[in-house]
Image 1 (cartoon, helix red, strand yellow):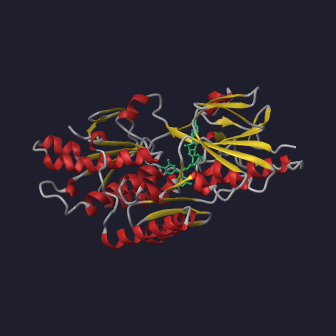
Image 2: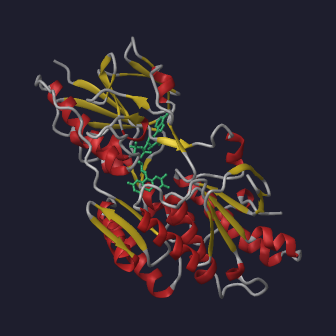
Image 3: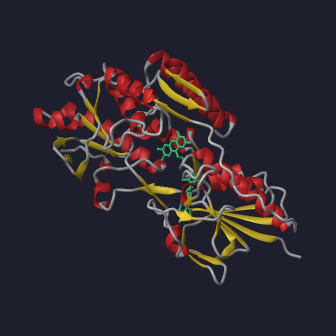
Length: 420
Ligand SMILES: Cc1cc2nc3c(=O)[nH]c(=O)nc-3n(C[C@H](O)[C@H](O)[C@H](O)COP(=O)(O)OP(=O)(O)OC[C@H]3O[C@@H](n4cnc5c(N)ncnc54)[C@H](O)[C@@H]3O)c2cc1C
C-alpha cells in the first residue's frame, strides 16, 4: 500500500515540528512554504536594529529537513484548498493530500486600516526587518545632510506603536543604536538627540507579564531615553508620522508592533474564526467535520485546560506541531488516538535594551542583567545549527563589550523612508 501523503503548509515553528515528528512515520511528508527559509522571529528585531544579519536567524528549510528521507520541500505559495477533492492550490498547480496540516502563522493587523502598512511596517519576515533597518539607518544619514531643523527633528523621531514584547524590544534597541552605537559616528548631528517614542493604547507595557515586570520595563526604557506613552491610541499613520487620539507626532520612522491577525486559512476553509481570524479547531486541533485537516500555531484558536486561549508564541506552535505529528503517525500506523491537545505554558521573556530583560518562567521572575543572561542563553539554545549559535553568541558578546552592531549596511537606498 502507498504511504499516506501528509502535506504541511508553512515551515515555521509549528510546521517544522510537525514534519520532524513524522520522521519515522510511514508517510510521505510534503512541506510547502512560500519562503525557502525558516525564520526565528523572536530575533527579528535584532536584524531590524543591525545587531544581527538575516542569515544568523534564518535557515534553508531544505537543509533542515535534508536528513529526513520521507520529507520533500516545495517552495510555493498556497492560495486555496478544495476540501472535497482533498487538494490545495498553488501558483504551480494542485497538490493532493491524505492529511493536511495548516501552519501558516499570522500577519500584522492594522485594525481595518491596511493603508497604514505603507508608512508603519510591521515586523514579521526577514524582508520586514531589513526594510526597518534601512529606514532607521537612512534616517540618521539623511539628517546628517539636511540643513532644516524641522526635518532633522522629524527624521530623528522614531515611533513604535504597541507596547508588547516586540514594541518594548524595538524601542530599547533603537535607543541603544542612537545613544551608543552611532553616538560618535556623525559630525553634524548628535544621534543621541533622537526621540524614541513607544505608544501603547492599554494602561501598561507588556500586558501579559506581571505588573511588577511591566513597571520595571517602563523604568528601564525611560532611563535609556525612551518616551513611553501608555493609554494613547494611534488614529492614523501617514508619510510624516502618526495622529494620536489627542495630538500628533511627526516622525521619520514609524514601526507597527500593535496587533496580529491569523493567515487567510480561515477563508480557504470557510471555517469559524475567533476575533483575531484564527481557525476554531477541536480538542485534537482538527477542523470540525474534517478529521484529516489540522490547524496549528498562530493560525489556530484553541483553549488551554483552564479555558484560556493558547497564546500565539513559538513554544505553543511547537507543542501543537509535535502533537499533530504524533497523532498522524499513530493514525497511519493504524493505532487509535484519543488524547486531546494539552498546552503547557513555559513562560515569557522580553529584552529591554542590551543588558536588561524580564523573564516570567513558572514561579520564577527575573529582571535586569540576570534576566538578560537567561534570555540570551534561552535564545541561543533554541537557535538552529551550531554555526548560528556560535555567531549569535559571539555578536552579542562583542556588542556587550564594544556597543558595536556589525550589520549596519544600507544595501538599497531607494526603498528607505525618511527622505523628506
Ligand atoms: C517580531 C516577533 C517577535 C516574536 N517574539 C517571540 C518571542 O520572543 N517568543 C515567542 O515564543 N514567540 C515570539 N513570537 C511569536 C512566534 O514567532 C510565533 O508565535 C510563531 O512563529 C508561530 O509559529 P507558526 O508555525 O504558527 O507560524 P510561523 O512561524 O509564522 O510560520 C508560518 C510559515 O508559513 C509560511 N506561509 C504563510 N502563508 C503561506 C502560504 N500561503 N503558502 C505557503 N507558505 C505560507 C510562512 O512563510 C512561514 O514560514 C514573535 C513573533 C514576532 C513576529
